Image 1 (cartoon, rainbow, N blue to C red):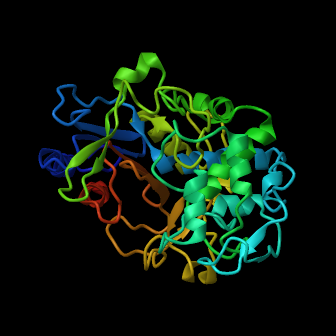
Image 2 (image 1 turned 180 degrees about the horizontal axis):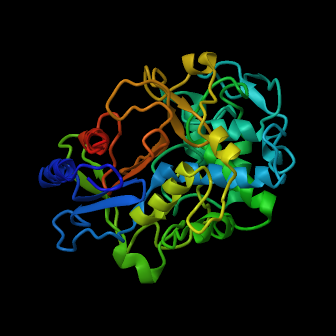
Length: 402
């Protein structure tokens, strides 16, 4: 056992189980990483593409999808600390498209059947996904769902080549009524997209420029961004979806023709970033260290990180929200991250925070165990049903030997 308190034999078990997932074709390849008390273990398995010969490498670049959300939340909190933004101020000044909102009387009703919003949307609403707009669960054959799809402002698969520029995206979003009153309900995804636009307008700079100066460069996240430049494209893994009938991986995004091969018109704060295992380990360590990073610098203060990683949802909001039934039984939501609130599994340590990416990635930092864990695959899988995800988190915690 090293300084990190990991069992070498149990790390070997982790490798064997994850390698079996690759051998069974559940993912062409994957990377796992555990970091605890200065000791880091990275395991690289498989290939970058189905039937490919190019092996997965430690510096392989992945589309991290919704793992973008915690990064955007950190960027917003930097501006809060600098008093450029305030958590409970209305966003109307910088996002006039969201001023004077109307709210659907019924979620399945006509778009014209609305009532006034009871209050303005705030930065806190964006960070906690309670702005009144987001992923619409349930029947999709309703006017609101159709309008969201027609306008191209929905919560679908990440596609940086499809969205318009931020001003046009906000204009389209602003033509819609809210689905629910601000603060009433947690609705996934859209809050982070709007947050990216807000940050760019608040700073007067492109979103990626601000992220690079204040987060990526200080943390050494050299391969993280909204596109993959030509000189790095050979390190990008092919992305796959599961065939709905066979479950086998089907190509979603290639390499030379990748949607991420050029800078996007809309830098998507909800799911647009690419990254590597070492880059995201650096981000996870900074969050675990409550804003501090190697070399003694700070991205955020300890109180800000503690606020971000505290459950912000009320019981009433949880009762009407969630991606799946029972989603909030042992989870909460902070600012851009989920937070474990109840111990119902080996890896479910209260206070553990992080988030997943729908194209096959996952991250969490655990203050109680002083551990950061990252899983990167190139196959889209829903975390609660994916054996790769489920086994990774069990294996990460069974490897602890102190």
